[in-house]
Length: 115
Ligand code: FES
Image 1: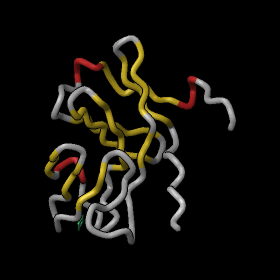
Image 2: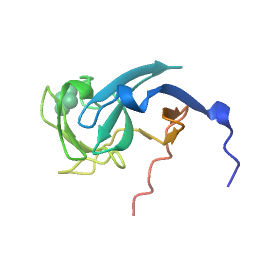
Image 3: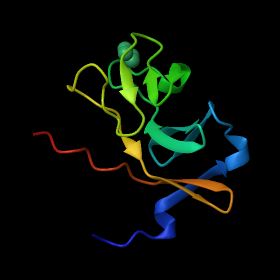
Image 4: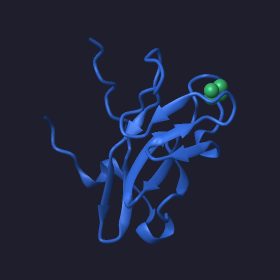
């Protein structure tokens, strides 16, 4: 496992700016990332729905499930998996909270291996 440097995380805002039950949309490099606060735990996903490109952050949040506003595909914020099938997923990003500041990894987590 390689070391992770600070430069690999992008500051996206203060904890106080992303209240529980809300999100913040941030852009860096080629990504638009939605950072959600679910009961004080932060999750970051690619905002682009893999179906036809809707903004997932415009959807409905229920616990750690986000439902796409266009055709209701549902994704788990924790790992990007679909909740009703496994043929696609959204990218997820590691999140750090330090000194009241939320940061997101510059690159997404590797996709889990399918068995
Ligand atoms: S664009 Fe998201 S489900 Fe169709």
